[in-house]
Amino acid sequence: MKNVKPSPIIVLFCFWLFLSFTTANAQKKYHISVKDSLDGAFDLSDYLIYAHGFIVVPTIITEPALGGFGGAIVPIFLKKHAPVIDENGKKRFINPDITGALGMYTENKSWMTGAFRSATLIKPRILYRVMAGYGDVNLSFYANNRPNLADEEFKLNFRSTIFYTQWLKQFNNAKWSAGVQYLFLNSKINLPDFNLPPPFVDPKDIKSTVSQFGGALQFDNRDNIFTPDRGIRIQSDFFWSDKVLGSDYSAWRINLSAIGYYPISKKLIGGLRIEGEQALGSPPFYLKPGINLRGIPAARYMGNTSIVTEGELRWDFYRRWSIMGYGGLASAFNDWDQAFAKPVVYSYGTGFRYLLARKFKLRMGVDVARGPEDWAYYIVFGSNWLR
Image (cartoon, rainbow, N blue to C red; front, side, top):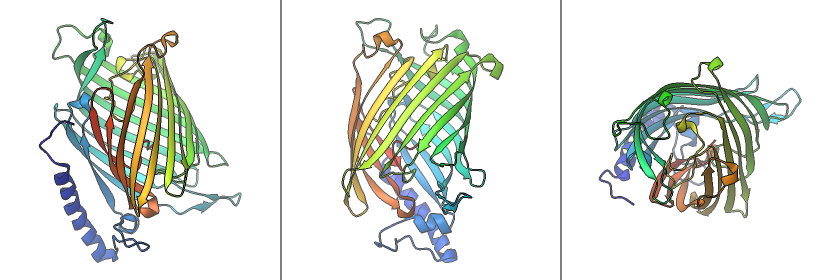
């Protein structure tokens, strides 16, 4: 891995000072302990529940497409809900509300700011997500116009405003839900290093508006949304983009994802993730399906179709501490008759987790991953597959 001057220890130390200050105030007012009542270990459950506290997630960004190094601060508020009894007499579990913000800056002078919320309207049984943000981001994209040579890198600057929301209505069986979603993206692309646009950039991509409306169907019986020990989540969704919606593009995007967890033994949890995405019509190049795997640079491998599979193991070896091991295979291509014609992309790695908030089953830790080109590491909140 590349050597960097700033140390994650400094970031975590600042986080510890901040948390110590806010926790001390909370303890004076609410007499709340950050030691768990069961094992006496450091635990933020009561602080989050009774003092309306929040977790500041300091993230070290090593994404090669963003310059290789940077940092982000993500304060996250959590609100726990007790189960409710529906009219049919069945108990319905309510996911915690999550509200947060984001501030990011990287070595290649990319920056982004935004806010998000994921919550439940309990009586009408509606799950909703809302997020908005603005960024001035320098991203690397790749193309290969000469098959016998290596892919060529193109560094592009995006100034973008984004808004996304999803609203799902739960069925009588609350594990099933369906609803609508919407994405708005306004972007201006600067090409500082080129006299002519790269071959994959259409002239209308330089300044464009994407407006997409879609729907989603979801089944989710995971035992918690942060770091599940068992259960599956399956979602099928689509987006439609058209001039009728105020979009500069006419296109469709279809997604199918399945994530599952199973306890192999009392302390060994296995996980499997399979995702596929298909683009139809003429979407902008930056919204084509890509490969999302730990250790793989964003926008490095893209096409009209992407297929990703990844497996992981979590070993809870000592009290609240766990060790991770994972690996994945993926492919991105333009035509199904050329599916997997290019070498399949792989990644693998390891990491650790600490059970930070037992009552939320929330774990945090660090992952280190290796892809075909380089190493990368990530600070993980909950799970790398958090959806």
